[in-house]
Image (cartoon, rainbow, N blue to C red; front, side, top):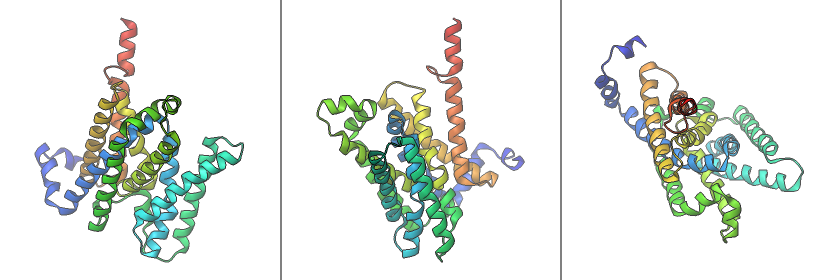
Length: 288
């Protein structure tokens, strides 16, 4: 900490850029943060925090199997992410168990299965890399995968923006005007699976749910307009990702945790001081 305080802001920002791994980590983290921030607005409106948690944990066995077979980890993660969603829907329809209970059962079961596979399959899989991400050590092939998947996620969200927004805000109204809400349901879940795969590179399985929820929740405290909310969520998420990487470099701390802590701090600031919905602002309005 003393070393960090002894540097000027210019040194703090510029010196890490002299390292190629830092430049790559900053670019990828900002990109992933922006993508997850964009999706987080839809998840916040839909109330799918638990679903994001389920998908992010359920990709664990897919990552392990893909690594063991020499396949792109994103392929295995996506298959198991979508598979977990399909299983949640099947169990919910065929039993009397409520959805939140089914989600808990499925994602913990998948996650435990992944841990067992890690312990039994002989490979060079680094469990900590899967659980907590490693943007500072990301390879060129992983960068390419991240760019491709990010492009797909953003393209789908832009293409189906209006329908998804209405579906997340009021699914009943969307259905009444002829929108295929079933298709949108599985489309959003598929996008969520892809975004979870992207987030694995920066914060890992454990913390990716924070990147999929916190930016949208933070932006939601600032505005009632969805367009403005998405802009703020992307901005907050990208900035927190960049700052998290910088702090992890200077303080020698875990990068994924650093990113999520910055996001959490931003949420706390919004919770307290947001111009419209911050609790201090609300108390001031009541007192006056």
